[in-house]
Length: 179
Ligand code: PRP
Image 1 (cartoon, rainbow, N blue to C red):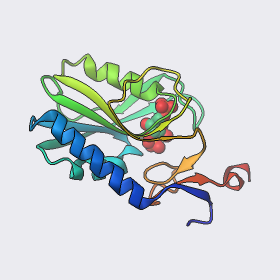
Image 2: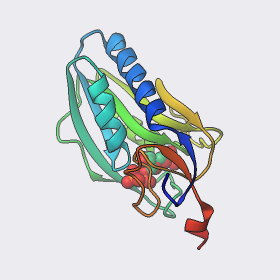
Image 3: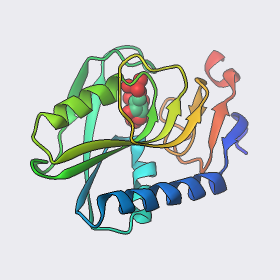
């Protein structure tokens, strides 16, 4: 375990098992129809990379980057698109792969934006959903794990851009951000 991590919340084995289950369910639900998996950089890239490999169906990938105004670890709900998708989503099944659904403000905005482009469908697969943290409604069809509203790092989740590469999800030791 990393010295800055207070405790491991979800192990690498638990992640692998759950992501495999999610992929199987997604492949079954779309019944062989082509799927565009979209993720919002950067945190979701790790989950997305594992999820697409667990979906036994025709899958394409695309990426967006957004920035939310406000403090460094709290969304404000005002989202600016830094990098849009490369291709139109009209007439396509879109699945947004998200690392963590926290306030929901980012995803609420992204879902609305993509729905306005006339896709066949838009659904959300969130690896983590923080319990009791949502301020904006987001319908999440696929959820990896519910987790406590704590400072989590690893498997894509960062603190000051670090720890994304930890293969597990852990609670960051407060000494790191309290100094
Ligand atoms: C995180 C995470 C989600 C968003 C969730 O991204 O990846 O996209 O916050 O927060 P919300 O539900 O409160 O809107 P962040 O803005 O930290 O960027 P990152 O993915 O580059 O770490």
